[in-house]
Image (cartoon, rainbow, N blue to C red; front, side, top):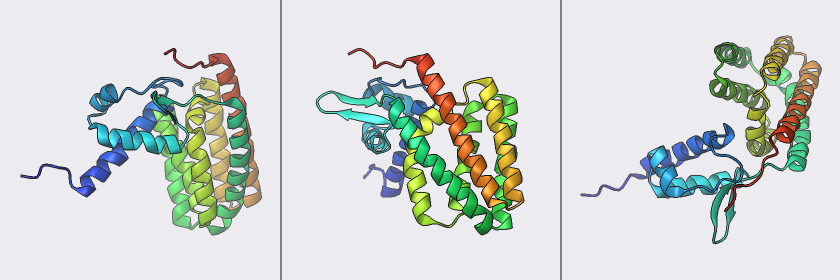
Amino acid sequence: MDTAPHPVERRLLHVAGIDRLRDMIIQGELAPGMKLNERVLAEHLGISRTPLREAIKFLASEGLVELQPNRGAFVALIDAPRVREVFLVLGALEALAGELVCAQATDAQVAEIRALHYAMVLHQVRGDLAAYFRCNQDIHARLVEFTGNATLVQSWRALNAKVQRVRYMANLSGERWRQAVREHETMLDALGARDGARLGSILRDHLAHKLVMVLDALDAQQVKPEAG
């Protein structure tokens, strides 16, 4: 009897492996510079090494993992100058998205973003940073996707994938977390008023504030690669 996973099952394992491994890196469970032990990770994630290797390769394309010849895979180090460059461009893209989405989004899409905001605030009140961050990223993604501009969506996704770790880090401070929620409330007000210029400005400033917190966090951590 053939017990090999069907193509759909293999695809699901591949996607699940990507999502779970990405979360472990973003949330700091796997620290920058750490070598990825396939045996340990496969056992921890409950998947075989084949989908795990596929997940590692995919995350390498996002910049979260570094593949070193004859050495293996490592959690990529965080390069502050590169982070600054990405945030600068990402801020411009989100500002553009803010202008466009106010003109393009349907009332139902605005209501969807509003519902995500309320769910995000509930997670913040409960102190659930991981769940908060997922809602937070969903809101930013919807703001971009609801512009209907495929080029903007593709560019934003590629860049945002490279800085999800540090966007998560920016909320590790309680005050910064509360400030982020307040900024999201102003975003929601601007979106509801269909004020594209205001929403674009808020989103650009939001990314600039987040960058400051990220760079401060990186300075405090002084992240170094794992020995060996």
